[in-house]
Image (tube, rainbow, N blue to C red; front, side, top):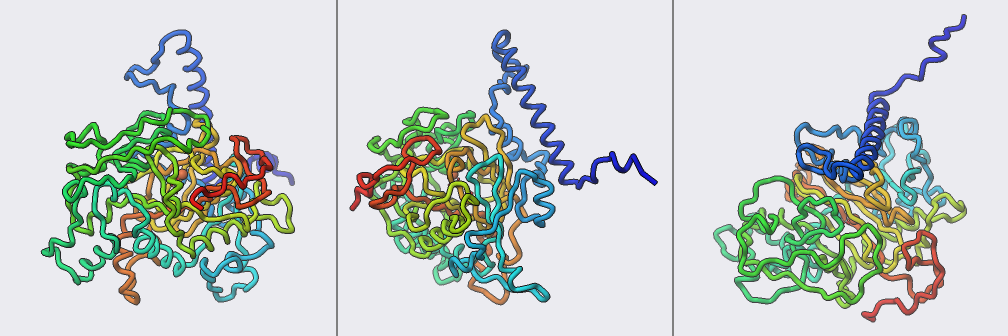
Length: 514
Ligand SMILES: O=C(O)CCC(=O)C(=O)O
Ligand SMILES: [Fe+2]
């Protein structure tokens, strides 16, 4: 007997699938409404919103940012694409996602031991366990996502590096603008107090303000600059695009300049680069004007000051206000990070399986030359932007996430493309290649209570306690870039905004520092 109602009924839908369909319908509705109101506002009212806000001017990227920034009601984080769903469910729920084996069908640990070797669980076939996959997305050509790439032990090692070692001079941090950070590093000071080797009664544990010590500006991006890529008008209160959430910060140097008492030497605002959606040519000789150290920043115990560390730069140091590199300030790049990033690029190259990864880059040409470590507290966010300061636009950008999960918005070449929210979790790798390298992206939300158990306090490893304490309210992102085209190369590199590789003899562009 036939059961016509069952044959014609759609297959049962999971809650997640239903939510995604609803979200897609809502997106379509908003896009249609925006289109309608922009065509009607062109002919009639320039401001169709009775509250005075020109909502039709909001781009889809901005809409998504606002959606995930909202505190009340709490956004539905399950709308974000979670690459760690069981493979079958992932591919069924997101038909635009494609799963591919890593280069040569190998596992990450075969590319480098720095990923750690994953344990084989009872009853699990060794070979089956070792297979690791990368994921691609039809709406985001050039995106490569490798979920759960690191073992817990490998994550701990990298997290320690990010907090204790890589944050030391000569790498610069946002704090260097205003504070005389000791060259042994702020983390060591924090550790000394944490382990009671130094007391808070000792004035030496309080990092002094630069403005009080001397008048030297050291030339690094401050929290008080703005992000010229953030076109949607929200205050972006620091040199990088990252900003703090709505926490009250009566004395903080991270407050928008307009809201705090005017310091005698107000920090520079970022106004030098025109606001545009077009990819500019790389400004190599723009003046690098540095913010002045402020005499208003608070003097804090190390445990609090460490939470004000927002970023550090690796390798070629970056000048946030002008969004250009200091080509003459090249700090030694941590060797393990060079190896690690090269291993990722090798894992997503195409040996023997042409066309699997559509924008491959030869690993032997990849060189880690610059990096940023972003330290997010729970209320911090990074507004939408494109990373376009590197001269080599063809090399992948490799990005690692540790600690709390976040919502990562990945858009397209303009803010008009509706972004895909991705749930970025500790130990995931996101690689931006080809056109994805020029895509708008941002982190509107760190998600509370998502610190994996293996990063929490662990009675068997008291040394980890201080890191666990820090991570209890933090997320760390480490991203690595190649600045120059490869040395004496005939490799294809892009020097234009085009995603089509242009073959060019690049020797002339090699590091002027050499
Ligand atoms: O935190 C992240 O995952 C993204 C960071 C980023 O986009 C950047 O540093 O340019
Ligand atoms: Fe970025």
